[in-house]
Length: 159
Image 1 (cartoon, one colour):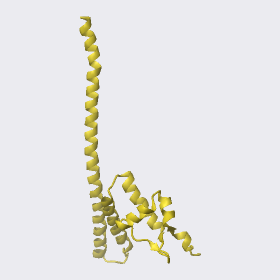
Image 2 (image 1 turned 90 degrees about the horizontal axis):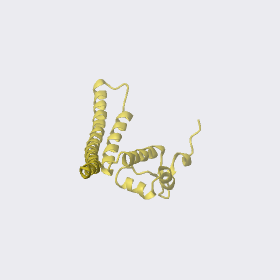
Image 3 (image 1 turned 120 degrees about the horizontal axis):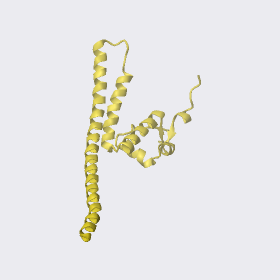
Image 4 (image 1 turned 180 degrees about the horizontal axis):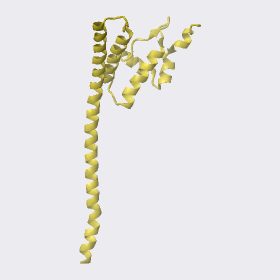
């Protein structure tokens, strides 16, 4: 099978930013904050993004935009994911039970860290939702009172 040319395996920063619907500045910022590993570079120093880099960028966007995670929370999530991927990459079928158990423990711990971050976010969202639902209930009560006022005024004026 023929090897894929390097130009098809990597995207320059402009192409990567366009595909991810982000700015080049944002990609550099993510790298600066440790969310993205430093990308491969061409001889001239231009950043090159692999398919794996693009998947990571998509994951960061998902956490940030869809779930409202802060960059610090995203970094924690991505670091835990990196641990999980390292465990997976180092898995050996011929390893003894103790070694396998240790790898499983590491993967489990990383996943538990991710769950804790999500649980904290969900708790905050749940509290905010309750607050807003209570506000809606109060508005509904006020609307009912206002709807009853004209009926009461009409009954009083007829008496």
